[in-house]
Amino acid sequence: MPDSNSQDFQAELELLREQVKARLEAHRLEVEAAIARLADAHSPDGDWSEMRARVAEWERRERELGERIAARNVEYQALRARLELERYGQQARVADLEKQLVLREAETGKLKLLLDGLMAEHAECCRRTPLVQADPAYVQALMGELEASRMEAARMRDAMENSVALRVARSLGWFLRPVRGLLGKRPGAAS
Image (cartoon, rainbow, N blue to C red):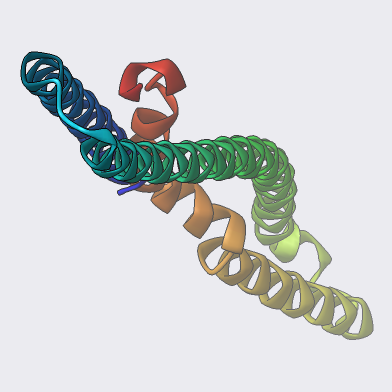
């Protein structure tokens, strides 16, 4: 939407410039015609005072139009500065999100390695179980460790599935596409 506001301001500014040019030209033509009439008629001093009043009115209108154009220029510059700040902020947020995504991917990789190690240890424990059935206390301790490992593996698997990093990584594609599209536009293209 900021681009359309900028274009609207620019179009309005151009319209005001054209109006000023048209009014100035009309006033100049009127002044020339009045001077020509006065010169032809060799009229008394009273006509000159009327002419001076009209010229003063035209000058006042010209100043007002100039002030309106200057005010629109200031508004346009303020809008452009605000848009530039917003664009910079968006670029910074995108960079931060990309850094967070990289960190979350590294964290997910570490969790996967840890989970793979636990699964391998679990498989090794399951394979050794028949060899150590002679000592019930040792078997009981191993069963406790196995159960703790299973709970830890389930907790880690659940943590990975519900991880904010994975959710962000999955949803970042649809979020970054439009943002990159907006950032790809040059600020001078709307001018």
